[in-house]
Image 1 (cartoon, rainbow, N blue to C red):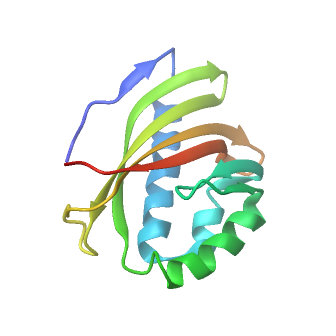
Image 2 (image 1 turned 180 degrees about the vertical axis):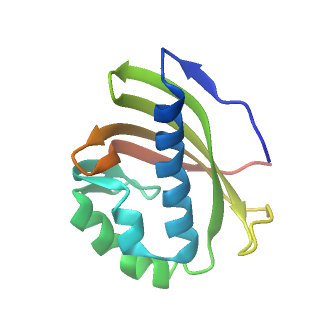
Amino acid sequence: MAHDILVVGNIPAETQAAVNDVVKALEKAFNDKDPIALSEQFAEQTSWTNAAGKRLDGREAIAEFSAPAMQTFLRDAYARYDVVKLLELAPDVIAVNVTQTPTDSAGTPVKGTHGTAFHIIAKQHDGWKIVAGQNTPYTTE
């Protein structure tokens, strides 16, 4: 499903693609229940607040939290992540708004808790990574 992305600032197309690739890799890792691939989308030094309100500092903490979560309460949870806004904060530092739509394992939207995530994605020595962010769940009626 194609959607419009609001781009604020002079963000080159290749940067937009790189940032979107991080979000899509995060989605794939979540849906594949792969805590290592998920954590690799984050910078070594990162600050992430998950949907439960727990702050996780560093890539290792994200992997350690995600591994058991993906085998228990997130085992049957799937989602589609769509970038909806990019805001240039500085060269190679982009604020990213993402919507998360619950899906079944085949990617078909289903009823359930939606999410909205806010990422700060920056170019690091090992590529574009999430350096800070928060995930907020919400329900629709």
